[in-house]
Amino acid sequence: MSEYCVSKITGQHDVVENRKFDSKEDAEHYAKNQSTADSKHSYEVQQNHHGEFKVIKTYLQGQVIVK
Image (cartoon, rainbow, N blue to C red; front, side, top):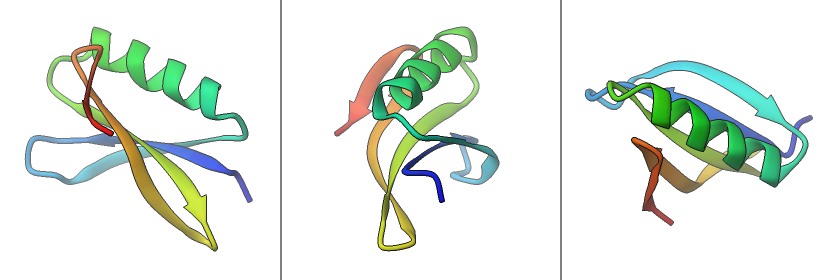
């Protein structure tokens, strides 16, 4: 199972898609780049914690909005 996941989130807090990563740096890089190019969605970086993914950062327009 992957250690990290990035979820694309709508303004209504619905998950549009998920992408899994083995590296935190890769997940954060992807989320930041995608959020810079896509102003309609936020991107949540999540970490696997005993089989459940928990949000560790949220990116909106290339900026961290939640840590």
